[in-house]
Image 1 (tube, rainbow, N blue to C red):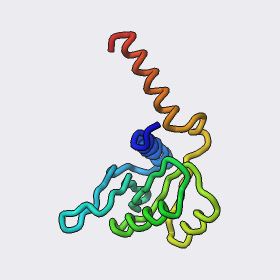
Image 2: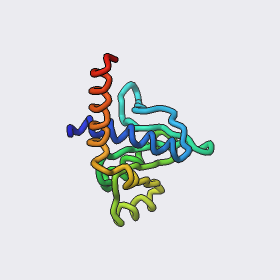
Image 3: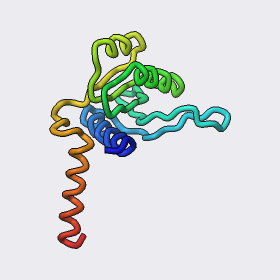
Image 4: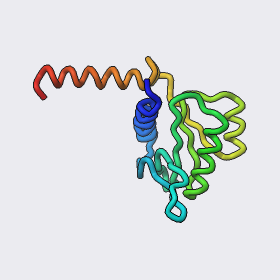
Length: 135
């Protein structure tokens, strides 16, 4: 699956996951500008219990770069950093603790297939049904 399509799918799944955990989605693809220049983009701005989070979504395994990106973008926006990914290892979890970046892993129950593949299959099935019945 193409990288951008995978990213969009992962962000959609992340939004649903956040909402199921009591977060409100405030904004998506929030751009941070300085002197008219776009310097960063936050995938999701979410809020829970009066606290705002800058959410970085990764469609695959978390890396040190993704932890740093979540941290830096959150600091620029003045929010708490949150990283949503498919999985992370002990080294990534340790780095995230040092930077106070919360990590949420997309639960295994979402992964009957790759999340992007499952979404694509469901979408295609819905399109076929709608076409068949003239919607």
